[in-house]
Length: 388
Picture 1 (cartoon, one colour):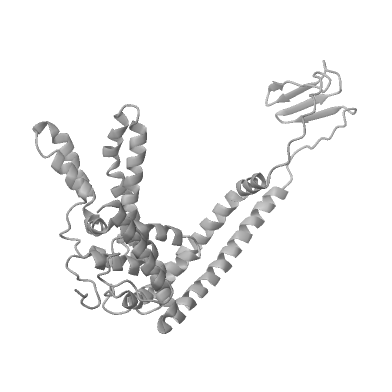
Picture 2 (picture 1 turned 90 degrees about the horizontal axis):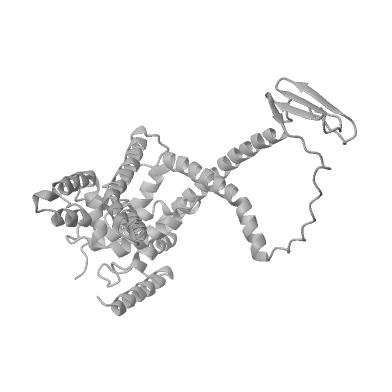
């Protein structure tokens, strides 16, 4: 495919999704915009707009988001206020010990364990000892006063905005982290509502739901679910780190080694961002038992398949394939439509911000399932048989 054709397909996808956002239908199952970056970028927004137009789903969707948002704001506000109160209490605590104020005329004599201060205005008698160590004493008459500094130029509007952002950055990060943590707790107890919504939103996306029946909506606690999430996090770190030894070899390249390693590591990270986005749908795991290893592992093993002197690299290839075995299925789904999944990954990153996450959580898995259905060669995941 040449560059002009690719650009035309992206423009066509943008036009189709713009019409869908304005009230039109989702792109057809055989629409030529499948597999484009714009298609993945806009798909969650298009599905969300379809949910808002649906009479049966709009109410439950908005009620769930409103209740969660109110709960998150109340809990986060209480926690943040409590944290500020403790910080202010610490700031208002007065230092313990002797406090001596001297105007330069009255002598100062302080004798405390480890601290001895004797100042009477005479240089030969002034002495300060802290923990048995003499501290040099300098009077204002020892050195001439420094010349006054020229007045600083008034900051520009951009400079004032930048300084305000720097001062408030730590607070912004703290607020976002606190809101994200409270959101995670709220989602943990109410995740069955998301599953219920995703089941019915699949109908709007034209794909089969991930479950045969919609789950019962209830507040629930599951240690098994927590363990599953923790295991997935650990697996993510393992699969990402498994390829770094190969990429690190690029650093031995003269001159451009560090740049090549950084570029390769960035591409490697985005590859797995796309794979983990595909894994949000259960449809991406349908071939979990028979999916082939990821393309880069297959290419690596083919390159070093011959020659006894390559046995250390072949051994690493086997270990690498074993480390990635548990994610072969979503990796295969991603490789069938990489541009669309990367577009969805970008939108998912933005929608992971506090507040937006509560709205997008039941929609992103459906969007991932739709991309999986579009790229599945066996056409297994459509709600009805796709057209010719």
